[in-house]
Length: 193
Image (cartoon, rainbow, N blue to C red; front, side, top):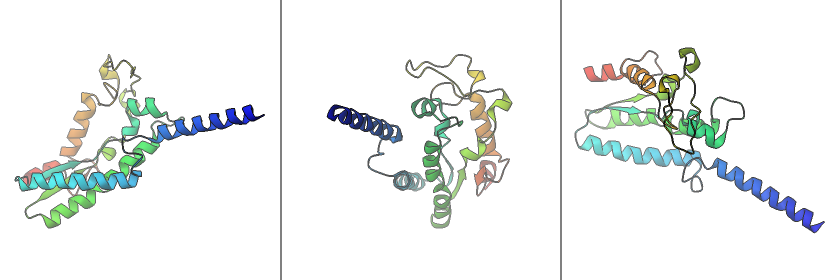
């Protein structure tokens, strides 16, 4: 009986350890909650953008982070329970992205001559890739191989989108097709100021 209780306890601890490992989707997960981590990243990013401003940058496009929970690496590591992406990762990314508009507003209102704009990668890439004939890649991440027939997939490796996706993003960043693509202005308008 004692042996059985010990085995159940060991099995429970093993499952809890695995669950905790799976929740560790950024290196400092043990130090910060996702919200705290997003705040720390924005604070560091703000300092870097101020350094650029101090070196003379006045027109700056600040790109948000894409849906990392939809990358082959995220899908392979965490699984999705039937959904298209790993929601917990995308939720953490969104915590960071949601802080970018206020950061852009702060810079535009407080730095003399500054013209910052936010490019919303999540909005730009929120489309049905299968309608374009693309599939999420199923590359072998253990071998770190580049995917063959890259024009068939959204990603050419575990993290990086193919040229077609990059052209789509850059085109819509330059000339927004939706009000949610860029804030307060797109790059074309920023360049004309």
